[in-house]
Length: 274
Image (cartoon, rainbow, N blue to C red):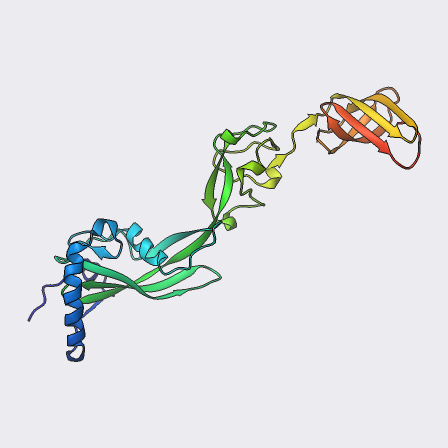
């Protein structure tokens, strides 16, 4: 008997093969077809990637879901992006029967993430065809990005930031994975909206800026004095700042302690005054 079963996979791609059951497989295929028919009638194809209703096209979302079922569950702080290279999707479907879809023979390169597999399409009547599937699995991690453009020197607030999932191989530097690590920090350079924020992009808020007149407290054993100096560099809390004593012209370094304030502590001896 001439089979009327034609699926679009065979119509579109010459490398798809459709096979009929052999005499030795006939009993198995008949039993399978009897099981498939009521199941196909009950399944909602629109919500199940394992089934295509008659005339329903095969979409990238459906095939990605089938491939994802074959992958190990990623760690909690990881996502998996699936990039399909073949077949070309969406793919029309002219089959008059419901079609069950399965992925078999999944092989994946752990180093590159590239994979190959076979897509098996089985009609409720028992006929089946196969098609090669190829693509790449890309690991993604959470990254902090600005939700707006940020100018150099701006202090970041929670509403300025959001989390996106990106491949770490696509980002130069060490991207931040949590918003709280960036809140309260200052942009060391202009930050573009949506661009991952790295540790090099941030700095502690500037308490002293170049040109500021700074009050410097000098402490040594049995001695404490205050001088006035001009800052030659910017500095945040706890950072060292380069200064020039306004009265003597002597250069010195002090640790930033507050807004336009710094401190020099000599724990060894009451040495020469700054």
